[in-house]
Image 1 (cartoon, protein in one colour):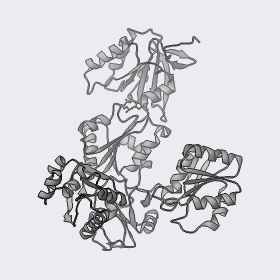
Image 2: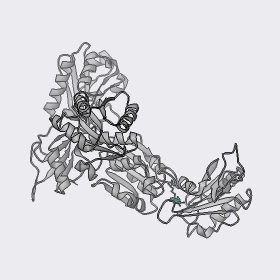
Image 3: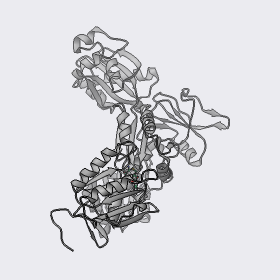
Image 4: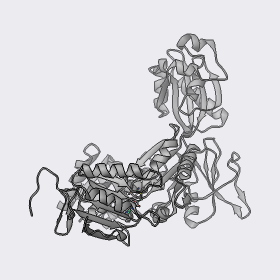
Length: 580
Ligand code: SAH
């Protein structure tokens, strides 16, 4: 529950907007302020105070008890311009999940009110990932290691388990496996370290353990099994194999047991999703300990072991079947599913790079693309991100590399200008990607859209986009398409219109259009749209000087309906045209 505390009329109005956005999660407390804050403090996990920071500090000071149980507090100023994370940056509120603290709340409130979030927790303010905000369980010396990261002290990253995580702050260690309880020694003394592992290592005062959900518990049981019995067997299996319960990501069984109350309750208690598989699928999986009892009961010679291994991509069995009176349990380490984000960076201007694209760049540990595009965004990447920059050409190699990196279980971003799917890297990558990785597409603002916005509204009705590059497409095919667009009276945008080596294509394409459009048809040439050297020229089919055009330009040719109005290129919607 989020308590909204307001005193003034402006504060009450802003609080009402937040309440309207999240009706089921908010409760509004009004003046007198001290009483309102006291009541909200008791009732709620999070407070948004529409009060000055000074007033809020004085009101909450006597109520402060413990960083782990105090509510998160965000302040919003009288003008509604700032949402300030005041208290409980990462972990506000009793039982607060990582990422649910005041920092996140400030961002959410700011989004509702159109305000700027103000976040001052050190790791957020410096753009480093707070170790407790990676959406993974984390144990150990979080404060000490975060401090070392901020101070620039050496931090080693040991990835025992590959998982699609953002870049972690530190130096990857060659020695990935860490001895249980062993201290990390270097020549210059003990280094801090971040260990990505599902093993139950004893930590020390310089080690953080990140827990990827890499383990799957397979469960079989007789009818009427108790949840306690399953719980106990799971706990023993993990403990004996030296595995951490925090790394168990799922429980799995056969379809026939999907409603077995003991299994359902055990999964719920452990907070795990329960996945079930048809017996026919489980029967196909090779296991070390098949037996005849489950074959007779449900139709598969293995339930626990086969279900643990049945996740997409398979895995390796780390705890073979263990039995109690009525249950069987086995544990597998599943193959990590890598992810590949195809990220459009927009035409150039930083504010045309979408927040979603920024989030994906920061979620990746490997970023791949043309050097000129990577230069545009390198300041946004997390420290420690591997950057694979390449020159023009070798598109296929770049696409293959991105997919291969994702297949190893990493989080990869493949970037391109404009939209990554428009004359760019998304299709070569998806031509070779299998269903063994997750794909995330992030739309970008294309050169066509950016240029059109600068020219006016040339794309107000049907339009066609044609690339004049005949490096990979026969020129006859391009000509045929331009001819068809000309005959169809489409507004036409030309990409890749002209380069040193390709000079005759654009004049030829314009001739094809001239056969169907009058000489006064408006033509826009936009070079370096939204970049520093942007130039915008509006001319006509008769007057166009092709020497203005190069590979950093797009050319937009109007249809027979397109007009120039007050120096702007306008294609009417079609159903109505108001004569100027
Ligand atoms: N994926 C990009 C297109 C890449 S093809 C997109 O969605 O826009 C490269 C061609 O795009 C260039 O030859 C040029 O024609 C055009 N282009 C890309 N960025 C541009 C910009 N900022 N201004 C003008 N044209 C641009």
